[in-house]
Image 1: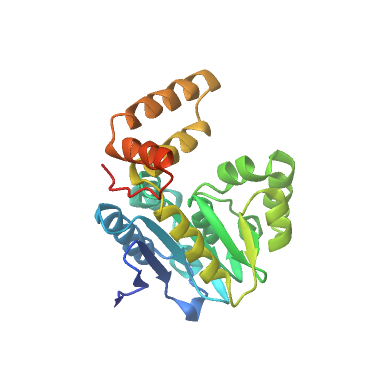
Image 2: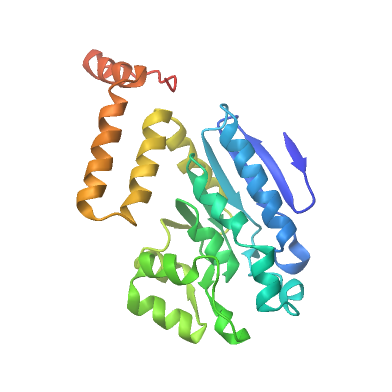
Length: 260
């Protein structure tokens, strides 16, 4: 099933994986407010859909997203931007419980790079280039670029990319830990789907709690993170999937997880 919205193409693949494709090719998928609202609305819809177990966000071969829509922002003032609270919609991505995989190619710049870093896993084509070039426009990232990039690649590399506006090719991004996998441009979306299906084969409750615990690790001190991990660990022993998984292991058969 394919549904076309204004700036998003929604594709359901095999039921368990939802695919959201950014669809502003004439402007290299520049992220305007309308697109971001549509994207997050669709993410939240898929998060509520029990048939969807994982979500992919992608663009096209030329561009995942080349950044913010500069025409939309050029005449804004500090006060007008504050009043519009434009980053509130970005923050809602962090509330998505299901795993989100970014399948990216071509330009992954500015807001596009920030959107990618908001996802849980990244599969990139070998033509992808990553960067935060906002400094060249007299501004800086505002949707997580300074924070998530530093956490992903370390202070020195993040500082270099942010202060120069330079871009980084896919193989270097892989070495730095910014992305998970590089594939040929004709295969990157297929590789993302393979990864998504490997995840959807796992017990949904464990997937959800693992995502939450790993995300907490970015912010919590170790002792608090360990406490949170153990709470999640114990919760899973109240699930039918835990009983099924361990029973199947002992019986040497494949488990049938139900998400309960």
